[in-house]
Length: 352
Ligand code: MRU
Image (cartoon, rainbow, N blue to C red; front, top):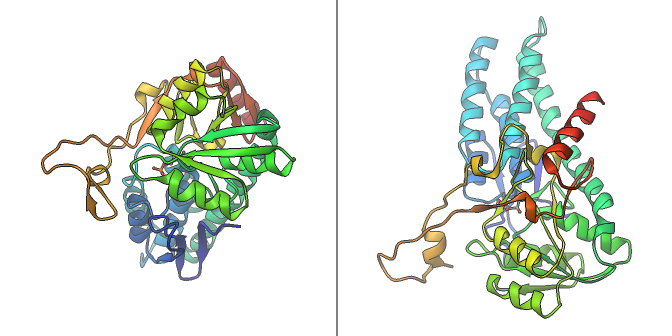
């Protein structure tokens, strides 16, 4: 399995995604601040991987805390969470993971006689459990979603929603992997995904690693391929899904969804329940990260645009729910109307 991120005794070991596909190197984040930097600089990226890395960052911060008592530890815990929460604003998995660590921490603090060492151990366990749950969720999404993909044909994906974006297996790419395991003859078309090139660099790398036939295309080629009948389905991941089913995902996803509708091609979104944000009413309420201009003006250290050219670099866009054929989660496949479907699944999950 692709080792995206891993808890070690020394810290969080991350496959450096800024260097793929040419170099397979690892970075050891040995403090919570280094985990935060790795998330900000996209050494680790993809909503579920960001969430679990942040949980490990919290565990690491508490592990290294020199707090003399529980009150000091509580103050330090808040500071650790704030630093990690300030890294990237769009992927709700980040806030979900930090909040889950907070709930666990509060539960531990309420136990009489609990020691700081016991808290350290329990928080590491919680982060490791989230890691295992993420892989299990990806496998379940794969099982639910594989049958939705064509038995033979082209499947287009945007960005990287694969093993590299999760603790393993992937969301959208996990569904493709499961379909291939079932015997579907799938040709994957990977949008290059300007400006960070997650499709060209990461999706192509990890699918080739698994021997799944993959063709990279520039983002502006999707319409033409659809018109020529090369694409039978689109599947993408998500960074946040609002209560009405609007989907925030990598910039460019919205355009792909509109094109898919125009060409009568199903548009699927695969995401774990930790990506669903029922407290955010619609896509308009989702904060969209603006990344540094240099990601657009330069590539590989080379300047592409004239000096002084103004640049816009929103990292995500919102696809309105009306373009989404189905949302594939580990709990099942949801169809419109999404507000009811999401609320119904939430209530069923809460009831156990
Ligand atoms: O900016 P990135 O690379 O973190 O953006 C990643 C995406 O947009 C993914 O599609 C999304 O996080 C889902 S990953 C399973």
